[in-house]
Length: 53
Ligand SMILES: [Zn+2]
Image 1 (tube, rainbow, N blue to C red):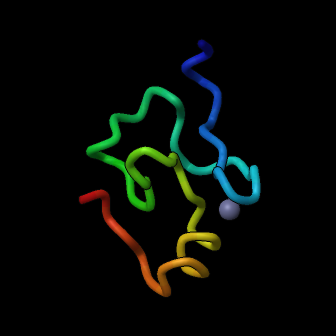
Image 2 (image 1 turned 90 degrees about the vertical axis):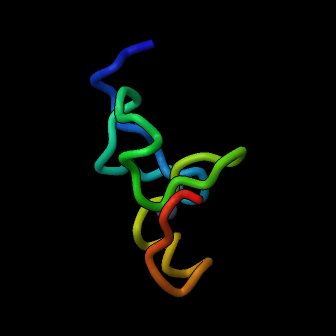
Image 3 (image 1 turned 60 degrees about the horizontal axis):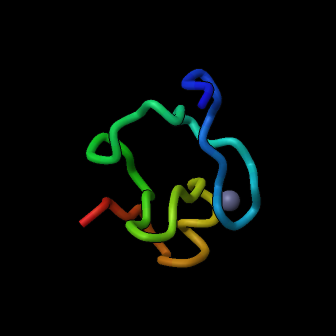
C-alpha cells in the first residue's frame, strides 16, 4: 500500500485531502464500513459535514 496516495471518495472517486495513512479518527466525512467521502458527496448525502461517529 502506498501511504502517500490520497484516499479516494467512495462515491465519485475523486481524491480526498486525506492520505491512506490518515487515521480514521482524524478524518471528516469518513463513513465507517463504507469509506471516505469527499466534501461534495458528503454534503450531498448528509447535507452537512459529518464527523465519524
Ligand atoms: Zn465524492
